[in-house]
Length: 206
Image 1 (spheres, rainbow, N blue to C red):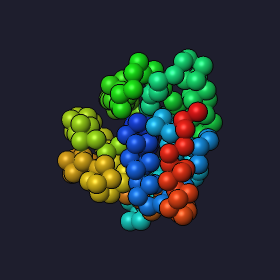
Image 2: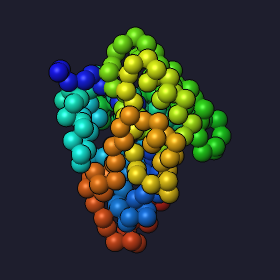
Image 3: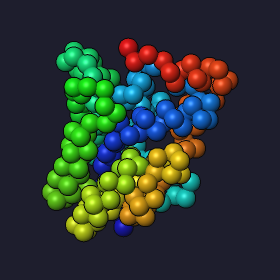
Image 4: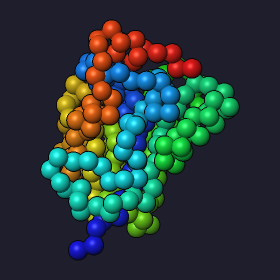
C-alpha cells in the first residue's frame, strides 16, 4: 500500500503552555530564540515539522516521509511588527503560521481554536490528506476529531502522555493513534540544573 498523505496542525498556544510546564517539571533548559518565545510559541530544534514524527511503536512508518503542510496557530499581545516577526520565525522553522493578536492578557485566544478547526475540516473535505496529526491536548477538539473521522480520514494526536501534562483523556480516546512526545521533547531540550531550568523557562518574552 502507498504511504498515507499527512498534514500537521499545531495548537501552539496549548503546546507552548504545556511544554513550558513540562520543561520546568523535568529541569529542561528552554532557550529563547528561533524555537521558543515565552507564552507564544515553542518547537523542538529537531525534527523539521514536515518530516514524519518519531514514534516508539513504529505506526508512523505508514506515513509519507514528507508531510504536505504544517500549520502553527498561536497569538500574542503585541503590535503588528512583532506579530510579523513571529510569523517569520515560524516560517523559518518550516511552518505555515497563523498568529493572532490578543487584545488583553488572557491565556488563550478563541481565534486559534477556530482557525485550526476550520483548516482541518476544510482540508479533510477537500481530500488534501489521509491523516491529520494534531499537536494539542485540549479535549475541546474531540468533536473536530470525530467529524474528521466521519469523513474517512484519520486523526493522530501527538502530545505529552499524562493528564497532568495537559492531555485530555477524551482526546486520547477519540484519536486513531496517539504518539507520545515526551521522550523526543526531552531529547531535543536536554536537562540542566534546576536553577538554570527555572531561569530559562521564566525568561522574558522579548
